[in-house]
Length: 335
Image (cartoon, rainbow, N blue to C red):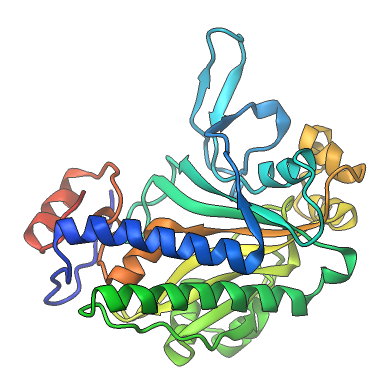
């Protein structure tokens, strides 16, 4: 059953027609800024991959991919969860060099995701990946890249608000960098979502670092697959959403594992059997470049910049009857 929260007195600031036009403008604006600032080239990407390659992202390890058989090949294929691993292989295949990268429109189906104001089983994001050198595998480079992405978001918002003054800019360029352990130490009695809400209320733009490893409490701050992000060099970009007085995550990103950290994280997570998969063999044998990358939610950025209360206002998906009824009564127009 989906969960819907309705802000008191909510009414969309843009008409349905204006919303559709604004989404298109926003996506083009941000895409151009992201590509230019990170030196990225747009490439085509798969909607599905073969399971034996290991290219699909297993997210938290229990999400079931949508799988189907292909009549002509006799093989199975899976709808992607994300392109975290495929992008790195593509960089090697397409002969990208240090300082250059790619981005793509990623569309996915995550049928086991919870459905609420910011979650849908349909996922659309800009997936990007960039080749880096060994000397760039450090926190300073990660922070600099985060600031570049935040600046691109803020620039996009400012330009969009010139076209639609009713929206009014609200994003903050000043990023608060904090680790998941530091955040737990600050708010030990709160759960992870409550901690995120608390920190964005103090610092409206936050990059929460080092996600994946177990904290001193005995639990990790959320789950993160062991075979793409380096858990010491990753994080989430969070913004304060004043409509709900809470945090909204717009990007999960990080410097990717090298052979050494992949081996260590597979051991820590009891996933050493993955070493037999194509992707993992390539990485462990040094066939893949060192990279940094991530995903940036297209619908979530649309929600935040257009001040929408529900992700269904900016994307088409399926919803349960209760969600449809609540939204109908609450000035929330689902596409």
